[in-house]
Image 1: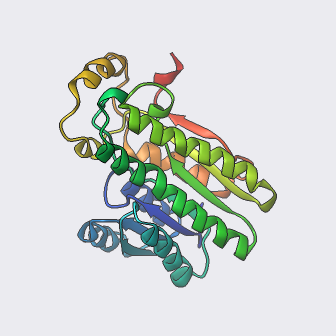
Image 2: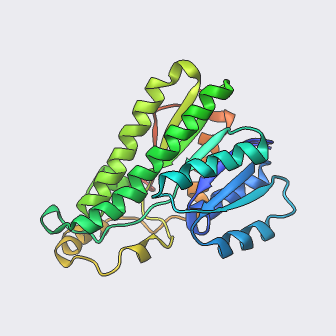
Length: 252
């Protein structure tokens, strides 16, 4: 098993890519703290995975809150004795607004979930990794929206910031064997579009020109497979990378 006895925290675990990661990681022997706001969905997931071989513990929390980011990692250490892997997967979409239409409220919402939350979790995870010794792995879910205009200004900025933090963390903690990588998914069939609400039509009409050349949506399981590689020792010499998983969309 590729994650046998590894202690892992996965955010956004109640649906989509996060749920697929938890399912795959537990099958690969990991002990997982599954984090999301919807506790009932987490409990259903835990029940479905009760036979393991890995263990799952649920944590109902909001990744936009510093306290919850720190407590989810404390829970992993308390339940499993250490932390080996952090996966920052939780995220929300903006409404595709161009910068001239961005509201303070939308900016704060998207940045708190997509950027501030991962920063809090990464900071806590690095502190734990350093105190334990022996390194660790952080996997951040960014987006191709950080590389091309595939959403609004705020979403793209939030994911670009995640990539910048990923690369900085990889370099700063290279001597400590702490790896940090990002996945940049393309169009994936998940529930994230539900967080968009009513789109800004100016932005949407511009972005749909880009979306028109996108391939068919990928699956959450394909992103989970990429996360498994980056979380496992198979990628032990990979750090500071952004793994694009988009069927070649951004190659053109």
